[in-house]
Image (cartoon, rainbow, N blue to C red; front, side):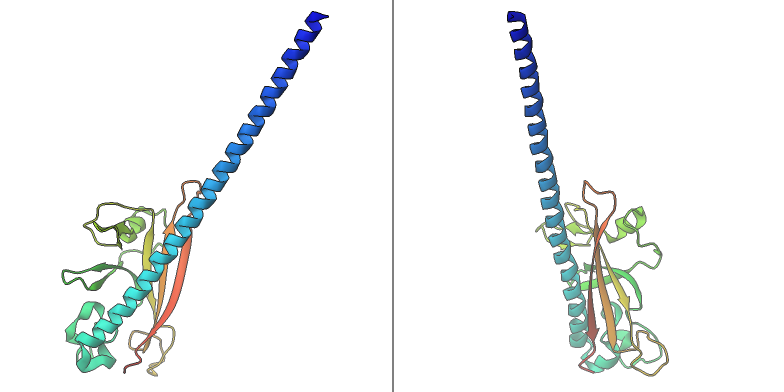
Length: 210
């Protein structure tokens, strides 16, 4: 009789331990999923802010062109990196042409574009793409694509320039037109995902001072 009681007690103890383990594993799984969801949400909010900042940077580039090259605002509103050779020169192209760019600050702390003329792939897992468009943090912990940085987060950021509408009756949409489409594309990879996430903010910048 005592042996049966002891055997029953051992079985009950084992069952209780199994139930406790299942309960602990369930709580741990809930914690992991909650943590991953929280991390993904935080990363997405951060990515939106990074993308929005570059839209504002492109508007700043247009406004700075207006200020620096005011003598020929119609021709120079979208000139690349404030090239003053554009003033009254309608024959050569100094414009921001349709392609992929990254933005950094020059020695005068003005926004400057660098064209990825040698890149054709928009793949986060492509090392060349990721290295060129990587977003960094500067010494003030502000996002930048400059080279003198102290930390590298998980994001890449690409500015894609296009001219969606022919406004100068040239039969083609190109950088001579007065409307520039900006796509600020941020990509990142969460630690628990195998596929990169992407945020694509779009804006239309116009030469309304022409």
